[in-house]
Length: 220
Image (cartoon, rainbow, N blue to C red):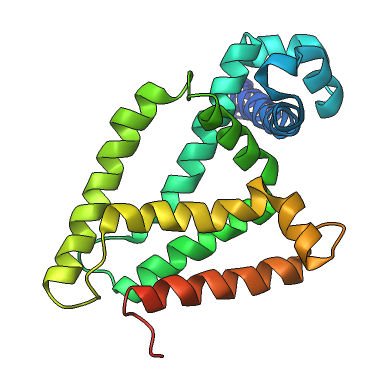
């Protein structure tokens, strides 16, 4: 009878299980941190409150993120990264209408799904971006300039109307994030206790139509 050692496969399984547990715990902590930082701000938030909101021991927060400041930075960086991933579709060979529409829809979906993350980011900017200023002026600016060059090429080859590409991004950010950052105001004007999926669907179609028409990418 041939005997096979199972120690290596067992170790690999245990490592995979630990990795899954870590990912699950980090996801719980980050979601809770978004809610607590959105409601209390960085100064008012505590690791104890975030731990309670996550349903995990406070020690777990320190184990995974070290400190409140590190957790806050992670929330900000994660939010910015998630907002920028959809710009991957803005490439020279892409269809301008499809690429810009996809970006707008992705941003609106993030506002609907993670409004607290948007509020944390907005609050950071309102306070002068002490944690983000360097990142905004380097990585964010560099990425935006790459996408601006793509849009300028589309304009130069007559594939869309002449617009200011940098301010197009500002417009998209403002139009999409307002439904998360100022949801109380939007809900009040609409006469709702809170925004529904139908409200977001209606808003998404409006923002898509408005911006695409302004870019000459939608027939009137």
